[in-house]
Every structure is written in structure tokens, then in C-alpha cells.
Length: 433
Image (cartoon, rainbow, N blue to C red; front, side, top):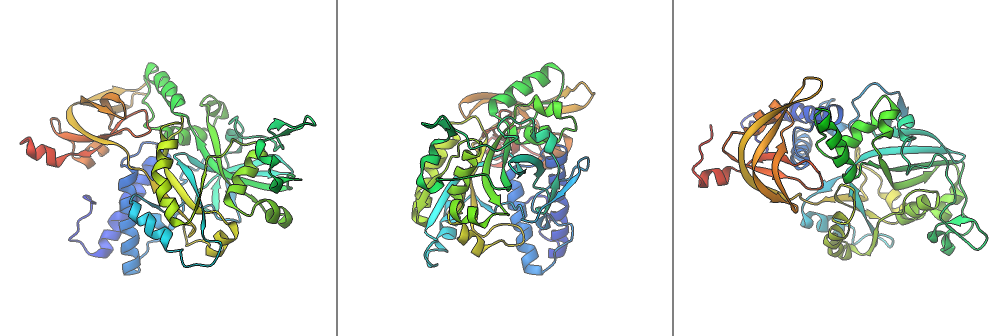
């Protein structure tokens, strides 16, 4: 699975090698916005590193397992937060998800209610509102410390600069969303301090437009929506960010100064999403499930319903306990919440022949490799070219002209080569050095 690691080395040496490789991948993904490996490969390497660290007790201070997220740019001021902004543990196997859910079956009452939400492939962001006014926005960063991106976030039109009880007009001419008619939200108001967390996203249609403009200008294209969103929000000039038409999807809402509000209006995860809508954010997408068995039954229907019917890149779904008090009881490990799990959908991968590699020169003189492929259908469209990122990526995958390679598209507009199809090369008697 991890072909860069020499399995004959000692476990301590393997840990050092894995840490170096994963840190290199983090730098390429978050700083340079040019990924050098697939998300699946990164996740599998991370799982291997975590297992070795647990087995040996050796944890390097700079190991990526000690970082909740990755936030490596230094041009922005830092922001500290009291409540950790964690990432979520993920899995690709439905049996792993089923077993995780069943592990809570014998717990006390209150653990039977679940919620399933889209796992959008964007950039996590925390928004702080004081007396209803947006005063600060920051990236996830290390969990407790992130980058201040307030000025750039203010350019995102789906993020209200001031919270309002808004929606459809009621009989008195006031604006309220439909959900506020629920008796549960009667008398709702805006607390003095509100934190809204969510994902900054770039629509698929917007990435297509941006890449067309970059091609016309002789610039390298963005690999996918996630990288374009990250690159856009980290622009030092907010005017550049404003041109990218980013959007925001909330996934949590907290208040620190009003326990009455928390008890009355924020007792569940779906309450958080509904209250965010009442305050002026986009309508949430979620399904509620009663019992672990229902969660697993809903997963594939959730994928079909959301993945193929929206203009946003979604690489999975997130399963959470709906009851907030139960979330708080379970708490966190050092890095991730114990009450949530992300199930990631595998991207469609096809095999085709690598016919050639061309080099595109950008306006700045930078050369970018592009794979020329034997045309193949992926996700409903014919693909004949794919991203190769850089020469290091080509060498890492051991790509050779004439070999069969795996190509993924998933939700991204730009396809990418993810590896060599060694089995097909052998069947076709293609010799590889």
C-alpha cells in the first residue's frame, strides 16, 4: 500500500520516513495548492503512521498526527480560540462505519439519534459575531490557533456581515425562515457572542470558469475546487478573493455567553444547523436517523441524493450524534471528536494508456506537465488529458509513456493521474523499468 516506505527498515525508521512524506504532502497541498498524492493515499499513510506510533510509543514532535489541520502560510495574523476546531476521523469501508456505530448501541438513552450531513470538500472556517456583527474569521489551523482571514471572508456573499432573524415574511411583515415557525424556536434572539463554523467552498461551475480564464492567460489551472478555494481565501488582496465567487456552508453554531439560549435552542446538532439558517446562512442539508442500522441504510441513498445533484464538491458524508449533551460527554481524543465519523465515497477510477506528456508554460515561465491519454469516459465525459502536478509527482508514481495508468475525476473538473495499472501492463506485456 505504501510503496515509498522500505518495510525492511526498523519501525522507528519507518516512522521517520512516513512523517517526512506526509509533511511534504501537507506542504504541497496547503501551501503550494498542488497535491502530490490522492486523499485516499494520504489517509492510508496516516493510518499506518498512527498504528506505528501507538505500537512503539514513538511520536515525533513534528509528526502530522500532532496537527489537527494544516495551516502553513505565515502572511496572516494568528487567532487563538478556546474551543478546539478539530478534524473528523474518516473511513472508506462501510463495515468499519457499521461497527463504529454499533459500538454505541449499549450506551444509555440519548445515543440512538443520529444525523448525516454532506462532507463538503472545502476549507474549514470559524466566524465570530459580537452583538450580531462579524468581527473575526479564521482558518482551522492547528485546532486552537488559526490564520485571520476576516477581510477575505467578508467578500463571500453567503456569509452575513450582520446576523438577522431572516427568511420569509410572516403575517406582520417580519422576515423569518420557515423553520422558525416550529414552536421550538419561538422567541429566538441573537446572543451577544456567536461562533459559526463551516466550509468555504467553490462551485464546480466557478472552477470551470476560472480555469478557462487561466488557460487563456497562459497560467496553470487549479487541480480541483478544494485547492482553488484554499488558494482564493489565502490571497493577500481581498479583491482577488472577491472575484472567485466562493460560498459558505455552516456545520456548527456555538454561543459562550448565554446558557439559557444553549439549553432552549441548541440541544441538538440539527438545531445548530437550523439556527444558523434563522440567522441568515444557507439552508442546511441533513438526514436524521434513529439507530445505527438506519444510518448504514441511508448512506448510499444520501450519496445518490446529494453527490450528483449539486454544484459543490462533496467527497463523503459525516455521521454524528444528534444530541449535543452526548457529544460533550464523549468529547475528543487529542485530535478528533469521538462522536463523529466521516464516510468518504471512493472516486470513480478508470484505466487508460498514457500516450505522452506535454509541458505547458505559464505566463510566469513555470512549466507544468500534462498527461496525454487514450480517450476514456469518466463520470459521463470523455477525458484525454489529466493533471500531473510536477516532475516529483511523475517520479513518485513511476509513470512511463505507453503504460496503463489510473485516472480519477470524481467531483473535480480537472482529471488527475493517480497511479500505474501494473496488472493491465502485465496482461498487455508492457515492460516497465
